[in-house]
Length: 427
Ligand code: HAM
Image (cartoon, rainbow, N blue to C red; front, side, top):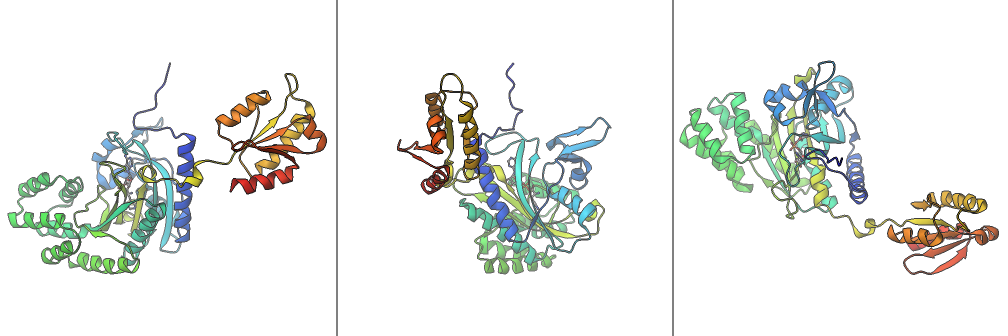
């Protein structure tokens, strides 16, 4: 019986894994240089961790189940709530700000489509202990720097949920309704926003103002915000300070007050990065983040935080690995058979030589007792760069025959010389 993969999941073949590992290492390296430390949380958590803020509604979008002890558990749909839970449980005594990064798989019960999966990976970072403009700017700059370092063509949009929330607060919209409006805005469902606002009794002028703010970009968005937002000028002041600091970081961005984010926990700055090279289709958001407060909800003191998460798979689909990494320089050690089996001295020497070469290069050794020609044909089929032939003659002379599989040239030499030669040719 042929068994297919579960819907929305993927297998990663060696070439893809190679590319993903290289990307991961680069992202990790940048996060470390910015002073962040890696953490890891469990793949599943108690369901409340995710429903406390968003309500039971969110269960529809999660892999949620009861274990044999009757506990309600869920595969994590994201990593911010787990990180803050961990902070409250384990890290609250460490100095603030606590700066962490993570890389892990997440699970969402969504309709699979191009660049949208049910199991996907996030690479993210959180500053726990500050949501001030300085922290906001650092987090945005870090995400921006990572995208730039990967050479992915992208567009950064920065907003502040405090602006829209201030307008909604003016007409006494309740928290739950506010979240609903934010979600509609996030999904770009303009007509529904207008219908819902009229339903809850908002005046036409207010709705028009709200829509203008959502639709405007850049300088115009700032002017609209200055004109419309009056009751909560703190949000506006915070945003103005952030915009100033972002300039010092040389971050190129578009102000977009219409960013509402799909998750309910954001309290201040929000931002999104979109792939701009046309590689992803509709699901082109490669990063999302912002300021939020979750610690108090999970039983800690009220600690402000700021963070982001990259959709690692979307980045991987937009990222082109440089040519020089595409092919590994692999070596195949070829013990030469006489008759149907290897000579004991030949295999002993071949294993020794292989161990030496493995200190420097990915090296294969035959495990199928194949003939010289069969081994060379295998070396060709895996596109190895070098073959190191070991026969009775070589063993006697204490040498090997190195064959360059690209040019066909070959010469006898000591193992040490062989290592030197491969190193020189492999660059
Ligand atoms: P999010 O926007 O829900 O934010 O997810 C972050 C990124 O994960 C998205 O921008 C997208 O690239 C990727 N992503 C989401 N769903 C899928 C999917 N089904 N398939 C492939 N990629 C997907 C968060 O999760 C927040 N925790 C980010 C954050 C960290 N905010 C503050 N700190």
